[in-house]
Image (tube, rainbow over all chains, first blue to last red; front, top):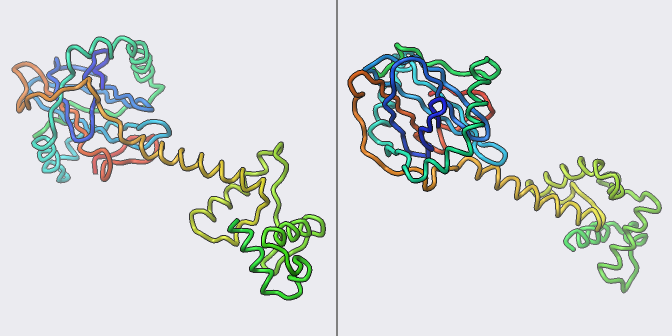
Length: 133
Length: 156
């Protein structure tokens, strides 16, 4: 998972990654066999949730980032999200391992981000009002 | 060898074809070889349908329909669906092994994890003053969270 060119972490099954970010526009990228992107517009002092849906690929997993929106909360998924937030193991990148992991991948991240920014790849949207109620 | 038995047994129940294909005192293998020779030479057909033979190894693409049929036979257990020569057997065995490996790789591909890059940390319940808190979650590796295809998936 990447916040533009900043490494967020590797999202394993049954885990979550929490990240404090500066409000404003962000491109959250996930890489597996494919790239998935969420273009987010964040407000200060609000909490947002993005779900990563893994899928089977040919040689490795595929991923689809799925921002939980205001409509999702209203349609009754708030309980699920709250349950997951309480249950999933929070993880953070190990400082020793980050440098060696990030460096070889930065060029690919920049390329993926620019393709989403230019509209070549389709990205999901997380609006300011899609915060956790 | 199982198919050799099948050839022999099927012909054994038909007196007329038994005479064409085997002679008294023949082993099962000899009888089968003779029947296969007759099939190639005379386009001998059984009641169940025409005999099918594999194309030459050079025309590998012609094997595809046969391979599909052999795989169906493997999965659904109908031995009468595929009647092959020994060379075809070897080819189809190789394809079965490759298909099995591809299936295992396909299933295992959904199980990637963070390895040693990540470590457990404290849960954050609220954003810091002036910051936004974004939580990325992966509730399940398999099960309800699975989506097939390359498109994005909804939460439901």
